[in-house]
Image 1: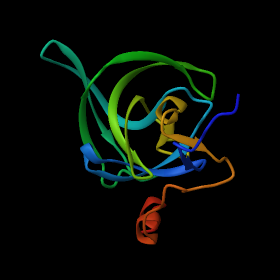
Image 2: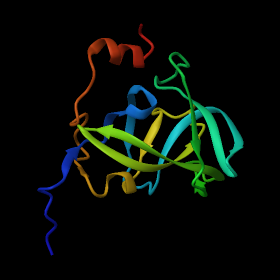
Image 3: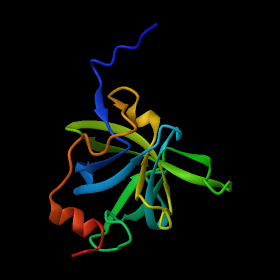
Length: 159
């Protein structure tokens, strides 16, 4: 049976996403079809209770290798997942729901929160986040568009 991709948007192996609800315009992501769930780099993770629900508060660092322009976010924890890292270690991570925008499409997605400071990308976009809207062309990058040169330099710490 042949899959019809006509309703899906092509994306590359790396893209730029935004989180409109969080007022974050740009985060460079690695599209990872090997990862089931998306993962976002965060810092200063703190748990608290609100209306008998468990919540988490954290900083999002939009730029690679920089804490500049960090944004404080709070969100309800929907669950916890045990994730095996690329180094083989298993880690228990909180899971939240967030709305991201990629290639002009808003997608409500589940993602784990973790420290990705040693990784090249602030976020991995897993296949659950992509399955209804996108298909990946592995040899391409930024098919969803990319920000201005000034923003890209800022992401690389050149400004």
